[in-house]
Amino acid sequence: MHGLFVTGTDTGVGKTRVATALAHALTRRDVRVHARKPVESGVDARVGPTDALALREAAGAHEAIDVVCSLTLRAALSPERAAALENVALPLQRLVDAARRDVSADDFALVEGAGGFYSPIADGALNADLATALGLPVLIVAADRLGALNHVLLTIDAVQKRGLDIAAIVLNRTSRDVDVAMDNAGALRRRLAIPVIEFPHGGEAGRDAWSSEADVLASLLDDLQARAA
Image (cartoon, rainbow, N blue to C red; front, top):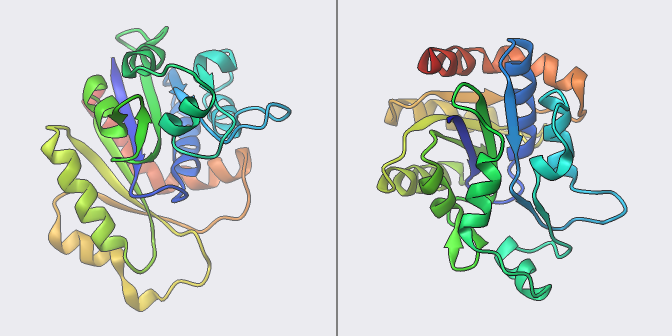
């Protein structure tokens, strides 16, 4: 199985926005993408798992939603805590199996975690443990704001300590009001040999946004396809 594990420096940094754009861009290149959000918390049963639904659509909607997301939980908390509140056993292996379900060796698995790299995702397990079990290269998403350098560098250190490759850093502009003098991207590029991608601010969602963002991800897509060749 090849692909990417999408993690964040924190919750709410735009992992799903980046992952959906990436899934759509890969699909446009005729790559068969298996989008996976093994567990999603904070789910309203009347609406469904919004992150997983967006990932499914971006990947071409060729799989059932319960394959994309095998477990939904009500409380908007870490999956470990939300599962405990519902008396649901959540062993790490359940999420590993869900991420690998129906994915062949030639297909691309795009797995989105929950929260940051060290956030609890299963009983006694972190996102880091899921990423390690899957062994996929890691895409780190960070909000492009003051403090991002510290969060990104800490996350890089954590990922590298697990022996995992880092595909790229994505700085996601979550607000229009960003001080350009801050230059987080430049600061990271001066310190790292890892690709740094600047993701523009975008208020809209859906296919139009995914298509417009594809060019931003072109270099990452080229690298991913070269690895798979």
